[in-house]
Length: 379
Image (tube, rainbow, N blue to C red; front, side, top):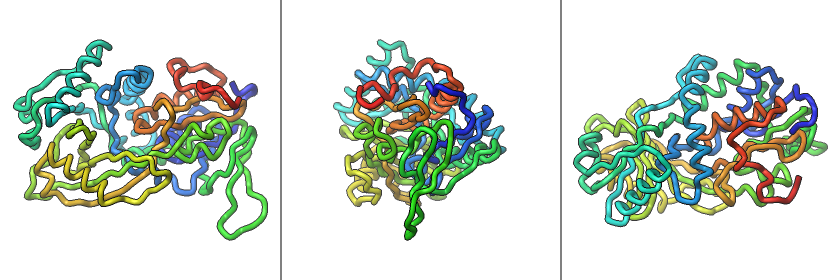
C-alpha cells in the first residue's frame, strides 16, 4: 500500500504497459508524468501482438494462464475505450488463432496441449490438415494437424502504441523525454544529458511506477536479479500482388520443435516471430535468426517466398525466473509493473487496471501470483 494519498504519479517506461498505466491513471484523476527518452521504441515496438494465453499455455504455468485469460477477457472493452480516447483505431483483431504442427513430434505436442487445456476446461477444436487448409488456404501441405483456439485475439502493436500515446496525451499525461537513473519514494532521479556534469534532475511524485521493461532491474533493489533481458527477433513481410494473401487469423505452432508465429496485419502485412536468446541487451539482428524464422514460416506458409521483406528487427523482453510479471508495491511509494516477458500486450489491461487500483489504496484481485515479494528479499 502507498500509505498516504496519491496525487502525483511518475511512470518510468513508455512501452505498451507504461503508456497504458499513464493513460488510465490520468483518466482516473491523477497528475501523471511519463518518463522515457523514446516512447514506443523498445520491445513493444518489435512485438508480434499476439493475445494468446490459451495457445501459449504450458503445464506448470497455470497462474500465468489464469492471469492472461483474465486480461484477455478485458481486451475488447479496453480496445473500445482506447479507440474512443485516442480517436483512432485500437488495432485489435478478433479472428482467433490456429496452432499447427508439421512432424510427428509437433503433432504430439499439439495433442498434449489440447489434453492439458481440456483438463483445465478451456475450449479448443482439433482439426485435420484438410480442415486447416479449408479455413486458411495459404497453409502448406506440410501442415498435418492443428487446433483452433477461438478465444485468443491479436493486436497490431504499432497501431495500439500510437493510440495509447494519443489517449495519454489527451488525458493530460506529461511526457518527459529523459532516462531514469533510479526510482525512490517521492522522486524519480533522471540521468544527466550526454556531456553534462552535475547532479541529475528529479521528477517529484507521490508514487512512482517502474514499467521500464528489461531495464527495470537497474532502477530499484527489489527488482535487481529478478528482471533480465531476453532477446527476440521478428520479421515483417508484405504480400505482393503475385502472392497468396496472408492468413486471416494468427497461425502459430511448433516446426520441428521450434516455435514460430505468423500474425496478419490489415495492410496485407505479416509479422513472423520470434527467436529467443539469452544475449543480454543485444538488439542486433543475426543472419541465423532470420534464416530460422523464414525456414520455419515457409513450412507453414510456402507462399511467403514471394512476399516482400520489409523489416527485420530485434528487441529485449523483460523476463523473470518464473515467467510471471511483477505487479505491485516494491516499497511504499514505489510500484512495479514489469517482467511481462512475451505477454506485454496481453497483460496490458489487467496490469494498468491493477496499478490504478493500487494507487487508489485498493487491493486488486487476481494478481497475487505477480507479487514483487514472492521471492523474498528487499522490502
